Image (tube, rainbow, N blue to C red; front, side, top):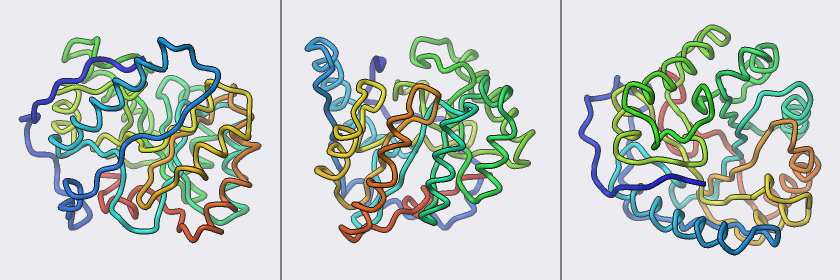
Length: 265
């Protein structure tokens, strides 16, 4: 489950200049809580999750490089964690391409080394290829040098494939505190979390995945899903999800467009 969160503003070095003229003044004015539930969670897990959600939203408000959602515009971003794998990731890419919408893939560095061709496929088809650390561990439980290594190794392996340095990352389990945010800032990263959790990992139900999105969607949502081999239901739910969002008038965009921050350095 997500680690402890501390409500202090990180004071790291200045990140490299952005490719975008960044204006995040909306960040303090438009704050979404995190939606999404599952009937398959135990009471203890549900209580822990709700506590983390409250804490991380508060933390993001005082931490300039941590984002939970985008501004109050009729746009949403679809994000996918934990890939790449041999089958589900490519299948998800195929659905996104079919509907001509952009996805955002937070890939695990150690898995990237096993499936570089899938990473290349995602990038060449115009989707954002981003970092989800190297080993997929709770960064809040590590020492500073270990957190730095997780950032650096994941960044290096992605750069070796796409030829660019990533500037957006997602912490495994959303586990983020002052130290993690400070290291991210020092390394030139924005930390991208989420405002809707489909909880696709917790259930084998396309209906629950769909309802978590369609029943809760608001302007500026960052929607969390997964693209590893365990998440075939996510692939199955995705076409109807895209259609429902578009019917509601939402533009599905990449995170650069949603947030106005650079995906690459």
